[in-house]
Each structure stands twice: as C-alpha cells, then as structure tokens.
Image (cartoon, rainbow, N blue to C red):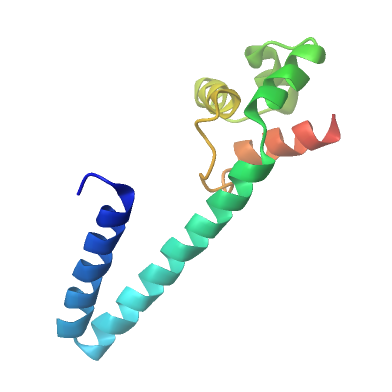
Amino acid sequence: MGDPQSSIDFCLAEIKNIYGSASPEKQSLIIGKLELVVEEINRSHSLSTTFDHVRARKIREEAGLSKRELVGKLGLNGSKTAYILITDYEKGARIGTPKKNENSQRYLSWLKEQ
C-alpha cells in the first residue's frame, strides 16, 4: 500500500466488505458517515485552493500586530489556544479543518475585512 491509489483501493474494498455484511440499519449509518467524509474532502479541497496562509501572516504583520495582540484585539477565547490557532493558520496547518470554532470564524472574518 505504498502509493495513494493503492491505499484508496484498499480502503474502498474494506468499506464494501463491511457494508455488504452489515444490517440495513448499519448500512444506513455507513452511508451517512461516507457522505460526511466526501463532504469534508470537498470542503477541504475548496479551502486549500482559496486560503493563502502566507498572505494571512502578511496581513497580520502589515496591520502591525503580533499574534498575541491579534488575539486580544479580536477578543478570542482561551488566549493560548487562540494563539496556537493563528499560528496553525499562518503555517498552513489548519487547512481543511472545520470552521465551526468561534475563534476561527472571528479570525477568518478579520482577515477578510483587511
């Protein structure tokens, strides 16, 4: 399973086997989970093509703000966690992660306003 296509083929075969031997109720749950996976893959693909982590850092720096200052300016919850969140976004490590977090929403909104 070295190459990505082999990994995908293996996973799909496993899913088919599990699905085939599952009860109708479990099959319904499997379909629901697969729909969530596909939705997340599609969402993270669209995020990765639109979010520029290098630009995000540049925006903050051009505003003359350190990460700590930005955390304070935005009133983000849990200053240490919020600092890590901004660091992760600026490193490109948060791409594809859900934006349900209030701190993420505030940070991304601030970036759009700049």
